[in-house]
Amino acid sequence: MDGSAMLNVLLVALGGGLGAASRFGVSLAFPARGDAWPWATFGINVAGSLLIGVLAGWIARNPEAEPWRLLLGVGVLGGFTTFSAYSLEAMRMIERNDWVGASTYSIGSVIAGLIAVAIGLAMAKRVFG
Image 1 (cartoon, rainbow, N blue to C red):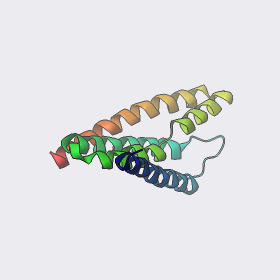
Image 2 (image 1 turned 90 degrees about the horizontal axis):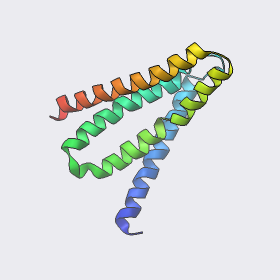
Image 3 (image 1 turned 180 degrees about the horizontal axis):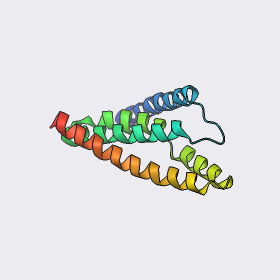
Image 4 (image 1 turned 120 degrees about the vertical axis):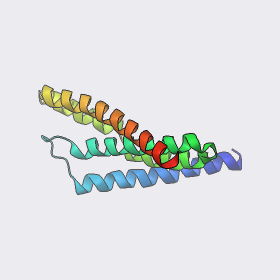
């Protein structure tokens, strides 16, 4: 592996560690109860969607920003957001026969995530031109 590829791996690893630690911090601040709506994961995924929209909008106007995409997009936001936790929480709702909760959580997560990305892209366009 050449020096450039190694630097890219290190950027992703550093960002991933920061994102995962941040996600853990949020889960400590807002602990999930087994029978409650998983607000922490929902909020993390919506916030991550908003932030990835802002980042993507900025990067689209700054193609030389590849290191930032690796550090912040792939690393931090990849480590911060989590599809696996969302999937497990939805499945636990299904196992409890909470079909309304599981459906609302699943559909709400997708819709809120898409809206957050759109808002993030619009914000980036407004701020970064």
